[in-house]
Image (tube, rainbow, N blue to C red):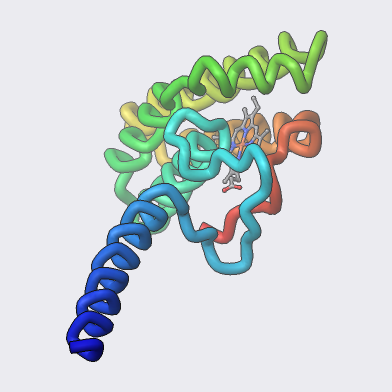
Length: 163
Ligand code: HEC
């Protein structure tokens, strides 16, 4: 008798235990290897600056590939997608504004410069001129790096992603 009751309690505990683990699993995101989760980390938030940046990085990789295989159509597509990158979420915009204060206007200008440079890459690529497109791509990269040099340290959310 005692043994059966005990087994039932153990079985019930197992069921509840699993239930709790599933709920907890939904709420918690495992950090990427080599990264700690820090307070305010927004890496997995699609409207975060960091997610958008990770996307820009992938488009630049695509563009490089387009150059190396001589495929200007994919260079153009990647450039257009950079020019039309998603906007940061409202909350993230407020965070950036808070962190930068009066320098925020410069941040917006830097974003605009990347947008314009990406459109110039797309236009060159559409014209089929590989060398001119490469020159424009170089300009675009400078615009990315300019903003990083000026603002990244003030806005960084934890260490650089390995993705
Ligand atoms: C208006 C400023 C600005 C411009 C323009 C800009 N970036 Fe960034 N970028 C940042 C900031 C700030 C961070 C740091 C974000 C963080 O760590 O939360 C960053 C981070 C990154 C990262 C690292 C993301 C990660 O996973 O940690 C990559 C990749 C990146 N940018 C690529 C680019 C590329 C490519 C361009 C140009 C096409 C570009 N960025 C243009 C401000 C900018």
